[in-house]
Length: 114
Length: 110
Image (tube, rainbow over all chains, first blue to last red; front, side):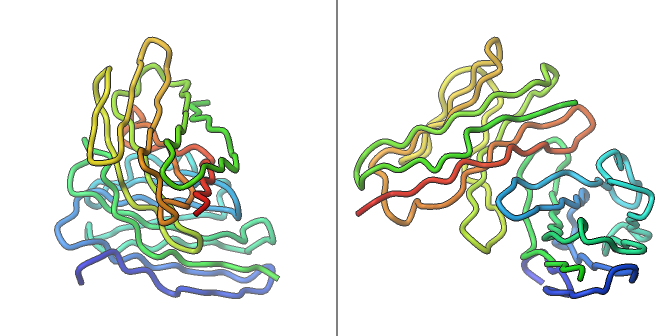
């Protein structure tokens, strides 16, 4: 596709459920980023991949959060045993070149944990 | 903790005026800075990037960077109601990630 595609766009989970959020970056983009954006806040960095290598996962808030990009293209962010504080929009972005900050964002996955 | 700080606003300016948005950052290792615009309910989109001290102009937008003061700004000339959005300042981290501020909400009144 022409842009970054994320699915699902909306997800409602009961507390304690596991969720998986998918990101399909722009074809050929080397770098892929996951951000968490709470209402009224800026995007908070979660993790960053260059191809299949996860170069920085310092922003993952707990060991319940896990991200992978096994073939250097599609990425999945998994949240285990969801908590109410996990409710947020999860943004995926890709970039052709890690040296630039020109990130192209997907529309986000809005997670609501009840 | 590497941080990017912005005044959350809201900043309200009349149509046709200059809007001035400011940002400070803590990581002296950051070499690149960016301004993203985010409309309500939408994802951020890049509007300006700046890598060296001084000014960079692109149409109605001017970005300014002062690395000694760890300060970045964005000026929007001839502000239009369509410029009403949240403006996010971001700095490039040393590991290749991008750290965002909380954003400044701009409202341009007709």
